[in-house]
Image (cartoon, rainbow, N blue to C red; front, side, top):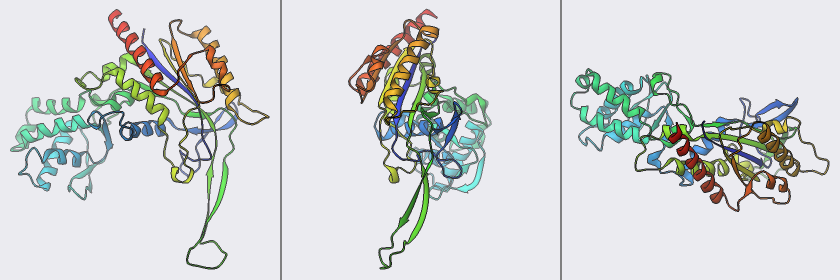
Length: 384
C-alpha cells in the first residue's frame, strides 16, 4: 500500500485577479451548475516553486530552472572550468553538449550576454544537472566531435540530465518531448483551486490623473475584472514516489525535509498576477494535513454551492468540509490516517476539531506531518 500526504485549505482572497485567461479575465469554471472562481494548478505550482527560493526553504543548488536558455546557462557554468574559452566557443560547445544530452533543438534567437542560442523547447533542468554537464563538457572541450562519437560519452551526458537530485522536478515532475527517457513522473498532484460558492466576476472602472494638467478630465481610463472568492485548495504528495525521485540527492535534503518545505510553500505561496494592484497576500484560514494510504479530494463537499444570508462563507464551508471528511473517512478512508489542522478562525472552524488535531503554527503542522509521512513511507518500503 502506498502512503500519501493530502493537503486541504480554505483560502479567502480579497478582490483580485491572480490567474487570468487569454482575455485577461479571472479564470472560472462551472461546478455544481454555477460559475465559480478558479485558479489553475499550474499557476499555484509555479508560485510554490518560486517560493522555495524567495522564502529560503530549499537551497538553490537543489532546485531546477525551467527555461529556453539552457545553452546559455551551460555556457556560463562551463567557462570557469575552462578559462581559455571565449564566449562564442563556450556557447558552441554548450550547444552540442545540451543537444546530445536532451535532444533539444537550437533556435535562431540568441542570448544577448552569452551569444548562445535558445532552444525551441522549454527545458526543466536541475542546477546540479547543469553543473554536471559543464564538467563533462570541460573534459570534452578539446575535441567535442570525437567525444560525441563515443556511445559511452553520450550515455554519460544523458545520465547527467537524468539524475534525480532536483527537488522541484521530484515534486512536480518533468516532461521532455525530445527524449521521453528523461521524463519524471510527479510525486505531487495539485488540483485547480475552486470557489466554494457561486462567484460573480466584477468590473473595476479606473482612471489615471495627469499630474501636469489642471483640467478635471482623466489622463486615461480603463477597466479590469476581479473576483473575491473563498477557495477550496487540494494537493496530494506520494511518499514513496518522492523518495524515488530524490535518490541522487545524497548528503543534501531528506524527503522529510522536502515534505515540510512543500507544506510550507503550499500555505505561504500565492500567484502574483496583478499583485501590485490588489495586494492579495492572504493565507489559508484553514489548512489540514492528513497522512493516509487513501488520498481523497474533498471538493465534492462544495458541489452544492455555499450561500449564506448573514454574509461570509467560512463558517459554513468549515462545517461542510468537516462533515464530508467524516463521511468520506467512514466510507472510503484509512483507519490509520492521522490529521492535523491550523486555523486563523477557531470559533468559525470549530467543527474541524472532530476531524483532526489542532496545531498552533504552520511550522508545527509541517514538521509533524512530514515526520509521519516519512515514518509510514519507511514502514511501507520495509514491508514491500
